[in-house]
Image 1 (cartoon, rainbow, N blue to C red):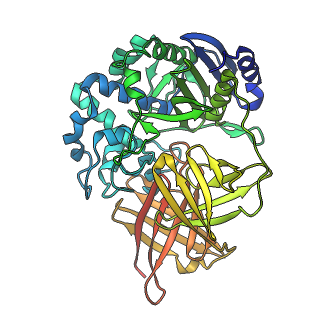
Image 2 (cartoon, helix red, strand yellow):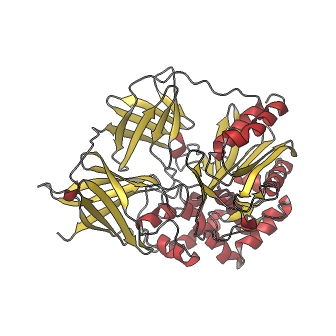
Length: 521
């Protein structure tokens, strides 16, 4: 890399209170094992005027996954030690079980349990107890795909890992984190705050935006293994310095965690052991993001450049984009060129195999692809494709080819003729699914159509169903127990030979392909 650009880094850090507007945040940079820049701005609690500082602990959420995987390596030696125990957590699962390494690499094919809480009738603010998790996971019968063949983000992979580690050692995760990682790394104030109702240091996370204002987020979930750690900027920068200090030891925890992962067919994967792999310019980074309602965080490390960036926010701005911008400044890289966006890309398509809709919306220089949990920003290429990291969209006649290298998949999307209205009375009624042992009720009234989910967690609120094409409906969930919310669920109606509605398939990127059958009249 070119010489570290300290001036550019300082300029980006100075701009953060404006570019990532919100109640407060912290950010820092480690270069060659030393803290070279850090900021803490705004407030940890707006009402009590409690300032945000480098010592304020915030939930790092899914960044915890790498700590769980590191603890697994330290206590068991490797994930294969637990392979014969997995069946006990998935007693109803049909077909081949994933390996525990495939859990670590998000290649299990299991559906995400936080997404499934919506279909089990959970409301965003209700309590999700520790004892609720394993029974919910144990109900799974099938997965998205054959284990090891694809990538799909799944929090329950790491919830199972955490439970396995505790059962194997007879100790709590907090003690194990502290012994094997926090202590050696000098993370002096890191703590396990598995109950999100009691955040460390009284920090408040905020939902909202600069346009609509900020309100305290109301969280009630208990998570462990997949998330749960709270740490300060001081803690996280100490962790990054420890990573640098052990960078040349092939047996160090982070070196083992950050090795190149692969799919079962030998293709390189971009996620492994709780770490995502990405490139900024020609430099490879490993890291992870974290999200809970009201909080966003991201950390990344480039071993070759001996560079780390940490960003933590108590609001819902894009922490990954912020961290990447700081990293680009440190590397002396210009902002990527953004050629004009050609016309003709706006539209709606269906990934029939997954039962998911995809929408592209363009502006002057970019497009947004709505397909997974949130929009992905795409740029045009000279060859006529749209691209983002690990993703390429090409035309296929009237359809699209969606190549997702990070998932090891090539998706074929068929065009849809979008509609503005549909007769919801034809699909109104009761439905149930054996996959979850849960129910769905659809109600229609004067053109308004709403869904209500019910299951082991209660009765959810009414969620609007929007007709998007013939017999294809979108169910929008913008607030759920975890964050980000699952996004848009697609309900594809099933009919018999005479056109009578018999059921449908419901899914989103985190939990797709769930079959429902209509019951009663």
